[in-house]
Length: 432
Image (cartoon, rainbow, N blue to C red):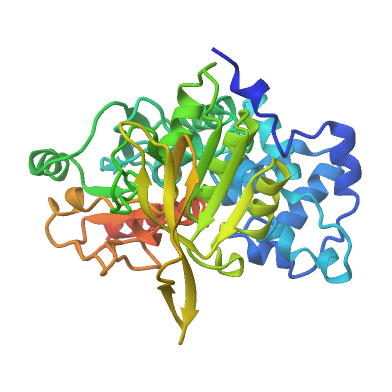
């Protein structure tokens, strides 16, 4: 079995001390810093950078973890180009933004390796909370609750924590080792329990939690890749993007990737899957999107990264069939156009692109079946759980929620922020 860390060099590698010193020297330590405002977890970025520059790595780590319990993971996987670094004042005068993400990684990596203990856990307050899902939202909520003295048990369906940070983020952004190392660092420091291979799936499971625990946090994320409902979708070489990325990360294989790959979709996950295929040696990788290039949901830098690896983009084409016998042989498309503000197919424009593998990056399904087993929880028309934004509380007061099940699929840093908000909300609710 090949080593993913060798196959996928990190696009944001760890800085050494000299690099961190000189990069931190560039910071202007802005008053009312736009980088901090742009951070969903409101990290005091100028402060931790000044601390790095002064040689106070312990303090820098504390500043970060005070605001963001997944400080190292977010440093690696955040789209810093459109968040903190995108807001850096240097960009206003066409100067390269400060490498905030890499500096944050430098400080938090030091904290983890030196086992810095930043938080004192109080004596048990006699109350307990169940968390469903050990992803970023669940872990963040657990840390906040333990800081207030609650017993916290996290129920995780998989055999590892971190949710998409481990299973669904491209391996060239963060290694498995890094994602797991931070969760273990937090678990040792805060003392929450993670019960693996335990899926909360039916009414009986839910009732047991409601009986045993004073409150429940739903950090369940999203489900499997959504079907696109076209003929041939059931062929073995047609796979969802999140499932494909998870397979590459958790079960790396020395078997060669398909020669020709078509990725359906125009989001960041599509770019990740396409980049991975190209890096694994596929001869041709095409990202096919039914709308125009300007309408893609992917960040510009994600598409640029994919193109650098050899990925080709094709736009205004919609898949109508996966062709082939028992195996995938290609995808039949039809060209599209905008007419009166609506996207429509151009009749008679069908064509086939040959391929050996089709990856569907067209969204993930909501986990409605679990929510249906919980009374009194309201969802919107798309299946997202509705919560009070200031507390994370659902319409069933005993339940709180955060992460992708609430925001529909945002960034790891958003889930981390929402988990912390819900932890505070649960504490206020149970303290009344």
